[in-house]
Length: 376
Ligand code: SAH
Ligand code: SF4
Image (cartoon, rainbow, N blue to C red; front, side, top):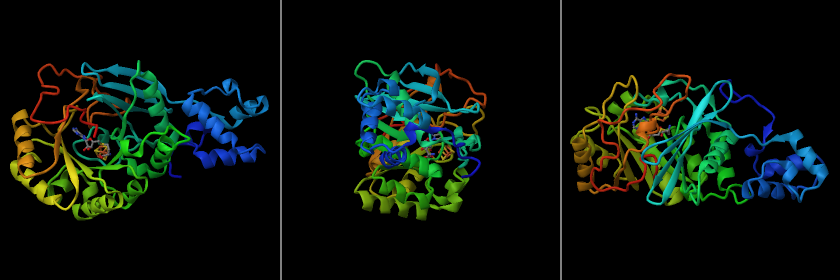
């Protein structure tokens, strides 16, 4: 365990899979079928207090708190955007925080969750990337973001999609991320469809087969039309250049019969020309994919600018003209600083809300789904 992994604490129930729980129970000399009963209380009935788990023996109930705790990350802040996006700020201890964002669109509700506090990938355009990695989240902290976010929903609202597009590089924290995914999708767990879970990566190529093995969807932050520009804006490209990245994408498509989603951030004067659009289409021509265009979201101290709506429109049109399957999504949650690349921890000062009165949030540009830009 490196110093950037979470300190081992009392075991969180939300970090356990079926085998872990059975083993714990057997070690106490109890019957392992109790594991299924316990999961049912927690994930189906949402009862986290052992005292209320009425079909378990008194003896077993009093034993539980000695081995597990049922605490979830505390919600420090809950902000709501004018467009319906909600952002939750979680306390993950030691003064560290992470954010999750709920994005409503077209009858879907996408939860964008974080995998790390900070990020070591240092992409030049990303606010999270401005902070070095402070800590990798444990599986229970990832599952906890889901459970807490679901709990703030009202009426018959329900999370329909989960995307690992919050803070951090999920493949830099594979063990915890894939453990959390197992708990999210397992029938004994949250029972969330794998096909509604997307892991987004900046391109840690050797770890990408784990996404295929988990049978979840793959999104790749492409963000540049060639190695020269990608080297500049995403340092990871120097280690794993486009040739390797695209091969890993093709392998994923073969393994899952799915398409890859390429995210492409439009940086004014850097990645947004029509020549770049043509290069991108040529680059990904062998990969079954869709391309998700994300106009750059400004943040304090950013070196880049958002292209004009007209330029975004032209780029979009050029991709479509060349036959690419392309999505241009409404930017959601900019007024609460919840859009792509704007998530960060509170240890670095940033405005909590942003004046967007002069910009077009969600200004409609061309044909697209109106879902949040983080969703797929
Ligand atoms: N680390 C993972 C997932 C989190 S980043 C990854 O990089 O894929 C989620 C998405 O936000 C990425 O596609 C990234 O390219 C994009 N992004 C980062 N900063 C942005 C910004 N300032 N404006 C728009 N999109 C940004
Ligand atoms: Fe990390 Fe993703 Fe931001 Fe790059 S874009 S710094 S990988 S969070």
